[in-house]
Image 1 (tube, protein in one colour):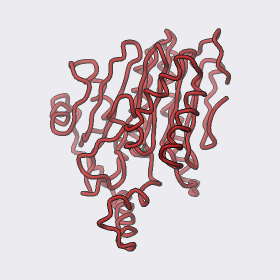
Image 2 (tube, helix red, strand yellow):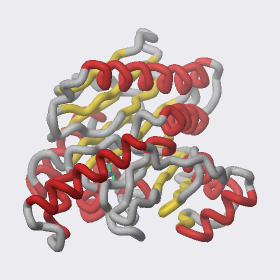
Image 3 (cartoon, rainbow, N blue to C red):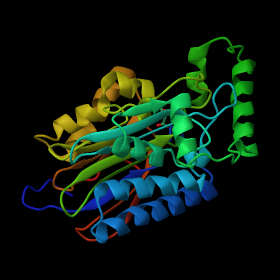
Length: 321
Ligand code: ASP
C-alpha cells in the first residue's frame, strides 16, 4: 500500500504484541488469529456504521482484554509478587485528549476506565488506589480471579530458570528470562471523518516489580494520536519506549512522511539504541495508510481499511508497502 496524497481510507489496525521466539504451538497461533479477527471486526463494524475512531479502538481493545488470550485484561501477566497490575491508555487525535491508568487491579477492561478519565475528568493519568476507587464507583471493579493455573505455571517456570542460574538477586537477569512473553494489545484507527485514535492495554511485563508502570500507561511512549500527524501504538520493552518517547517520535515523522516510513524509522532507532527483540510499532497516517514494523521474530497484526474492505492477518515479517 503506497502513501497516496489524493486518496483517504478509513480503517483499523491492531496488534497482539511482539513475539521474540517462533510460536511452535499451532493451537496458540490459531487462538491468536481467532481473537484478532473478532477484535478487528468489532472495531471495523463501528467505523462502517459511521462511528468514531475512538469508539473503534476502544471496542477492539475491549475484545482482546476480555478474551483472556493476550497479556491484557483477563490474560494479564503476574508481577514478581504474584499480583496483577495493568496499564492502559487511549488518545483521541481530534483534540489530542488522552486518558490513562496505571497499576490497576480487578478491572477486566482497563481501557474503559482510561476512556472515562479522558472524557469525564480534568486529568490524563490515574494510578493505583485512586484509579481502583474510581473503577469501584463506576461499577467496573470485579472480584473475578485472574490468577489461573497457566499463569502460575509460567511464573514458576520463570522463577525456576532464574534460580537455576543463581540469578535470583540480579534484577537485570529477569529481563532475559521473561523477554519472550509480550502479548500487549494495541489498536489504531481512522474514521470516515478523518479522525484518528489510538488505544493500548497491557498487564505489563512478567515478573515486573510492583509499582512499575510501562509505556502503555504513558502517552507519547506506548501510544500517540493527533489528526494533524497520525497515530502510533508500541509494544515491547516499555522502558525503552518511554526513554525514546517512541510513539510521539513516530507521529512527528508522519507530518511529512508516510506511516510505513515512520514505523520503519522508529524501529530502526529502537534497534540502534537498544538492540533486537526490543519492540514493534503500528502506525496510521492522515490518509489512512498503515505501517507495521518490529525487530522481533514476529508481531501478529490484523488490519482492514475501506480501500478493499478485506481483513488481512500477518504474523511476521514486517511492514506493509
Ligand atoms: N510494552 C509493555 C510494557 O512494557 C509490554 C509489552 O508490550 O508486551 O509494559
